Image (cartoon, rainbow, N blue to C red; front, side):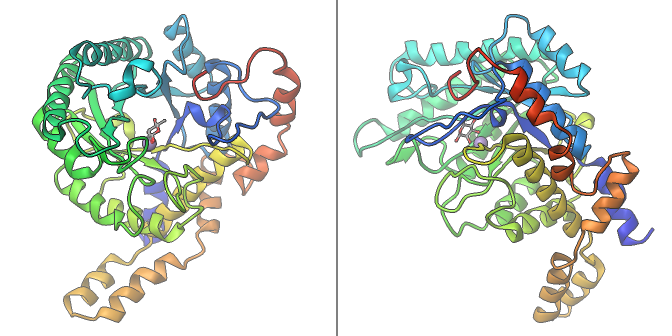
Length: 396
Ligand code: RM4
Ligand code: MN
């Protein structure tokens, strides 16, 4: 099989998970702009997510955020997803919007608050059981703003203890994924600031605990593909939260800020044979969930998700086209420039024709999924239909 053919085969297997919150309104602390047609409940968010899958063919799962996606009947929500050709992916716990969490959640100095945060995860596990989700995702806002505010070491001990309680809530076929972020909302010391801290806690928990790498959660200049390599070596890269950053945790469309970085990340994934599709996951195995974690504050939301999916797909296609034999030969020969050129040659390839071929083989219409969605009339239809009620958004 030639490289193009092999790339097509691999691309056919690739899946990308969508965040329900990308379809609701979001913004900065200055302003949240409303948009006609924005979903008013989790059912409408799932319907919008289905549009992304419809035009890309590779986005069959949607993540929930609890309690943003609170519904009376989760079986009904999962059935609604299935009717639209989707399944429910990760369930995200929310530890950052309750007054009790002012000084932390799983690390809080008061045992009562820690117990409350653990109990919230029990609620999330119930949602997982009702929806068929197999992954519980934790991101902690916990940290301190001032030296001396709390005991750094004790906070780690409390965290380890709380995480153990959360891990114990999971069924055997479920896994826990722990995200890190170097600052914000805490500014002095974040309790899970980096991949090393997340990895240490995951190793202490057990085989079904993995690290989440959000591409926006690093200091400027961080070599993210190196982090990817280390986590893959340890068998602990659980998931990506793809997005773009220019300054901090900007949550912009994946591949918009730095498509070359995305390519370098996807090259390490491909090089480690880690592109395996989600349904084959063994909770303790090395499977990676490729997920988007984004907000569309000013651009259209469904289109923004579609573009992000195709950007990840393009980076993957380029990574798959790297002539790995030539690269290895040049590396072994110490040919620095030659090796670099092999990598760059793949990066500079126009993969749009290859992806058009892929879409055609998947039975999708239209060369450009964003253009196909735009001409479908869906946005206009939901803008006319979704009147009344309250537009979904952060905290909704
Ligand atoms: C965090 C992190 C999480 C997301 C929350 C809302 O910065 O990226 O993945 O769930 O924001
Ligand atoms: Mn994230």
